[in-house]
Length: 217
Image 1: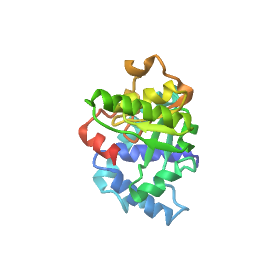
Image 2 (image 1 turned 135 degrees about the horizontal axis):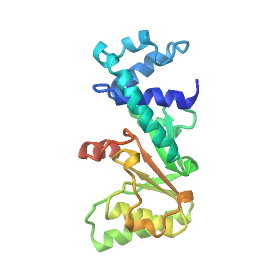
Image 3 (image 1 turned 90 degrees about the vertical axis):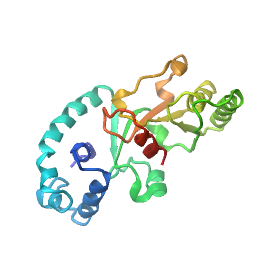
Image 4 (image 1 turned 180 degrees about the vertical axis):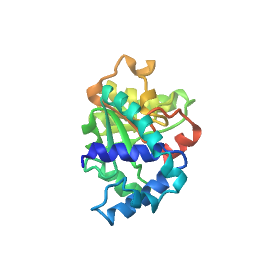
């Protein structure tokens, strides 16, 4: 079974109403102890999901199929936690809480780079903005990737500082990756070869405060 097939199945599970990351992790734990079983084997599913949750999986699969086609058109890479390409640093730092899926758009090689996270206020002072921008530029000159969110203020200026200095940057979304659009603040220096956009949420999931908190953790 291909890594893409595993990712598709995991996205189907996460899309199903009432089936969150916790139940999917429970299913994965059971699956790893029975590697001969397909991930979507009914007997295996029944150990982690309720009958009602299993009943809606066909509908979820159809929704995911539509999203999957759009993801392919936009060259989005879908990495599941069982994929060898999934960043090992994320597994180590978050353990069982590591995102089940990472939807990535841009230069996937950036995932392997040494990175530093930068975050701060949307309404930072002029000094705070310049500090974020200058710090990101210094990191870029040392070959260190800059990671931040996609909000105004500190986040956006961290990305701008790194890209202006010729470095790389990773944008971590609090919404689905199909909602991503390059913002005007960095449109003039946008370079797909030096950027990576990442989301752990459903492809078309809207932004929310709870998603932002989950992303930050």
